[in-house]
Image (tube, rainbow, N blue to C red; front, side, top):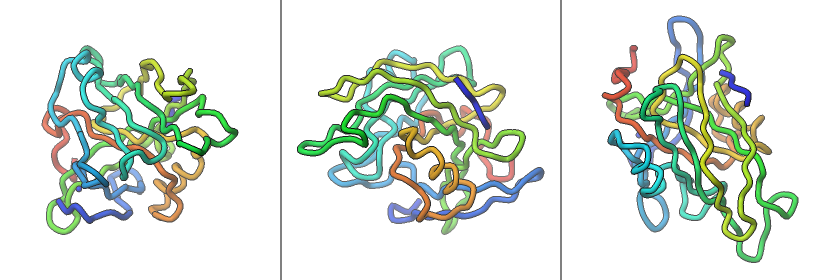
Amino acid sequence: MKTHHRTSVLAFGFALLTSACMEVGTLHGVVGEARSGGTYASTLNDEDLDTCMSGEFNALPRSRGDYPGDFHVCGDDTDAYTLHIDGELKVQLGGSYIGNEPPTRLCVFPAQVYDYGGAQGKLAVFKADEAGFPMYSCFDIDADESSGEFDSKKVRFNLTRFDSAFVIDVAHFNSMRSCLLSGRQELCPKYAFGQFRTLESSDLTEASQ
């Protein structure tokens, strides 16, 4: 495993955030944003891991049934730097995945949601590594070819706290990293996103921290 390093319903875009040590791309994303046929099922309360993993999916694409699928992304009960992920990949009726098979590898980019207030609202900011690039972890999955379901995977990002995550197919790794770094929406592939901890639980509630 490799590791590297909204509140308007209609708000969605990109910007740059200047921190004390580097300039990093930020994703404008509305936590709880409306989606076709329902709303995000973000888990905004700390929960027992078993409860989180067996509850509603909390990392979802912007539109119901959209690529790459629906996921449980949950924090570890004993390790703030670890998350667990399982889910159901999108299985197209009358269609297929790239290569005619479900993805066999996913990537997760950890993020932190900050409340900037005003017109900006809540923004999900990627966690950066020492070089300023988005941290990530890519891992193999063995998804059922008919349902798209795969078993839970454990992912650790050393010494960084986070409350949310982006999930993509590894085939779109380069475009996801590029869109986060550049802040250019047109470069962003389809992804799932969800916030699974409260801002208060992460001790990072202000944009200035």
